[in-house]
Image (tube, rainbow, N blue to C red; front, side):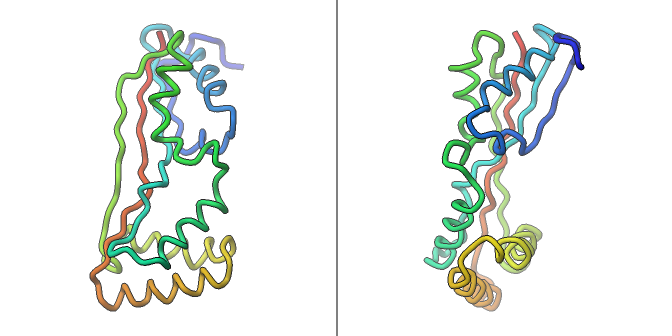
Length: 166
């Protein structure tokens, strides 16, 4: 067991989004493990509202909506963007917000690493999570986008939240 007030730094990535209804409680427990006044907690989590493909197509919007429903409970969806408010309203007795940095990755379809990642996810994991009809339509639209090369993909936003223990 790690004693309270003994750590200098804690980094967690994509953890809080999987703890529905326990975010403030879990952050508080982590903060108490840090040294008072100097300990830093860095939380990196997702904000999925930013996922888009332009030009906009209903097939892609349906795909992202289906993925969101398959992956997230409403209480934790877009948690990354909610972190500063959680710190300032529910943890202000033990923590202060130092920095909040939202990061967004973009790229062309098909000529970018982010497009490659999205396609790989589509054909391996998403295929099992969404309705076959939605999958078929988005795969067809993706093929069209790779032919025209005029589509830009915006990833989910990764939010860095730096918190210092009081």
